[in-house]
Length: 224
Image (cartoon, rainbow, N blue to C red; front, top):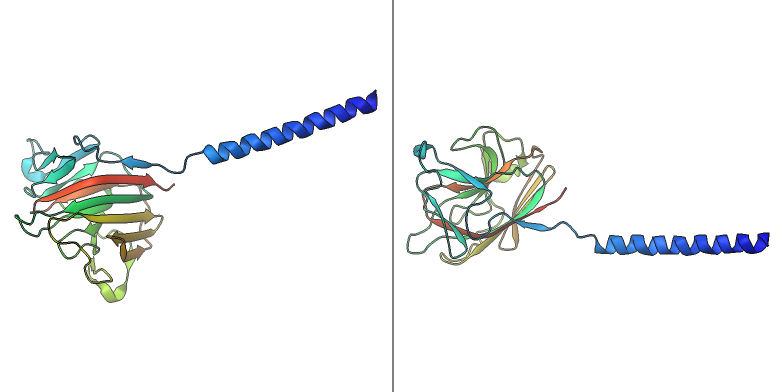
């Protein structure tokens, strides 16, 4: 009787262990990987706020509009639109284009933006000036290191010749900000890297910098 009871308990324990293992494996298999978050919903500027000094006391969102699923910036007055949430380690993707009828232009994506709102806030800039996408600008002495042979003051040139598409066509930025490393990918090509970047939560901002520009498909994946 004792032997029979012992055998029954052993079998039950083994069965339970198998069941728990299977359950654990199933849970791991169904746990979603880091998901993409749409920073721009294609309908309005929910989740964003604007800083345009020349419009103090007025509608600072005036340079920005939404139409046809795109975020459009008139380019003037100078300033930026930024996320209301701060991000530290992330992968950011977005598309941009300039209007060939309005000509080449300038803008930038500001990363880990910190401190007081000002025209040139403390941040790392992923350049969007026509022909120079992939360049890095260090704004406000943001701690970071970049290739010395391509760096002049606060500006680090991209590694390869421009691979931007003709005006009017959509370009794609893939920006990796992970720990102390920054990578700028333009249309699938790694154009620039910075290391030893200050690790701090900051806003993501898009500049209004004198030229009409459109954005779409702005999405982010948190890495940690």
